[in-house]
Length: 312
Image (cartoon, rainbow, N blue to C red; front, side):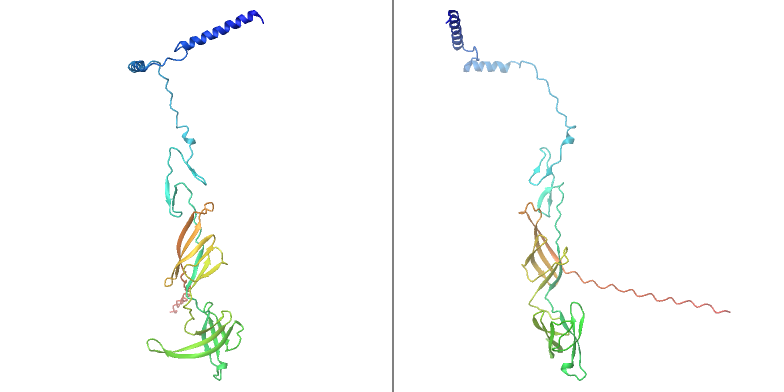
C-alpha cells in the first residue's frame, strides 16, 4: 500500500471526527437553541411590543365574474339526481299529479288518459218483450200470431206462432201464452198479457209482457268501453272488481244507480324507470245522456201571389 495515500486517509478521518465532535458539543450550530421558559416569555413580549418588520405582500386583484357568468349552466335534472349550482338554489313547486315537489323548470309529466268510458250501469233487461197479438180467423190458440219487439234494436219479429221456429231468430221458441188478471197495491184491477219464451242462446225460460222489458233485479251490469280500442269492452257486476287496461289497474269503488255513475280508482306507474312510484287517479264516470233527435225544420209556406189589379 502507498504510504502517501495512507497518510491522507488518516488525516481525512481525523478531520471528520473533529467536525462531528464540534457539532455535538456546540448547541445551536445547526439547529436553533430551544430557550427555556423564562427566555421564551421574554422573547414573546419583545415580539408583541415591537412593530412588525418586513415589507407588505403585494395585493392580488379579485377575479372578475362578469365575463364568466355566461358560462354558468342552470341546474339540470337527470335520471338519478340533480346537479346543483353551489350558489343558486332551485325554485321548486308542488306537482299535484305525482304528489311531490319538482323544479319549476321541469317539463310536466303527461298523465296517461283515463282510457275507458261507461256505456251503461243498472239491472240488466231481457232483449225481447211482447209487442202485439193478432188473433186467428177462428180465434183458435194455434192460429194466434205474436209480434216480439227487440228492446235494444227497436225492431219486431212478426207473425210468430207458438211452438213454431222463428226464421229470423231460430234460438227462440214461444212456449205458451196466458192472460193474467189481478189487483195492484191500490186495489185497482189489471189485465196483463204474459208470453213464455224459451231462449236457448240466453239459456233460460222467461216470461215477458207487453208493458215493460223484463228486468233482472238480482244482477247488476257495468258495461265499459275503451276510449282507444273500439273492439274492447268489459262487463263488471260489483264493487271491488278490478281489471287492467293500457297498463293501468282499475278498481270499482262505488256505484250510484240513480245518477247512473260509477267511481273508479285508477293506479299506474308514471315513470317506467321508477316502478315503485305508483300514482293514483280516482275518477267518476257517468253514462252519457241520450241526445234527442234533431228537430226537422218545417218548410216555409209558399208565398201567396199578389193579385194583379183589374183593368178600369
